[in-house]
Length: 320
Image (cartoon, rainbow, N blue to C red; front, side, top):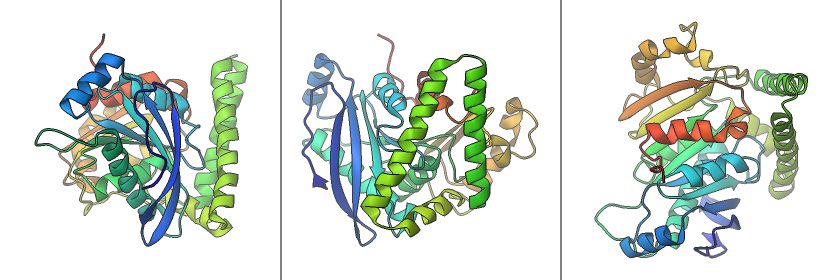
């Protein structure tokens, strides 16, 4: 990894920029790191040469920079056993999500090596990869590339579960944004309104930044098509744990598209074996939960989504 050296123990979010070799390209990236460990926890980690749990790597949604899912990132650090969470945003490449997934693996390995240069014990230090929206598809491809590094995958309102048309996805996104804004305004839910507007501004700024950094409008339009592709399938080889969290009112990533036979969120469980066989046949475990909310709810109510997801994966920190 060609980037800044990580500094441990500050307790403040840190930003790192650099590049890694992936898919024959030098993939540039930006990363935001949150270390929520106390001084005593850091000392224990140094003594044993490893964190108390998996480091969390978060991949943001389409167009978002690492500043977009700030509540999700903070909650991941505060609620996880390791107390360490990183948000990774690679620049769109000509190789699309596959190359970006390879870059995410390289970045994660380098971060872990920098944080714990002298790991102890027979087992490698591992990570839980989390993806929100389009980041869910990218994160799943990264997990599939290196299940030893990423033995756990958490998809939050993730794209990639079904094949879609680009025009339909874009229209769904804008209609969802209008619904959320109008509902928040009508109910005077000012926090939700503020977060939605912040995410929209961040995504727009992120797209402009990606255009400048990639110097290719073609890559940005191709990136939308990558968000429409189905990632898992009957031959999908990921062997780790899979947890999918969907939002009941989400009209962008609709949980019913993946479970068309279900007429209520409580009815997902009976169809899970068939869904697993068609999408994650080699996974050690697959869990699906439909939570209250919409496509923005993972950032508005980050604690609820992360408690559910990390809890199902055994990565939730013990209450103090």
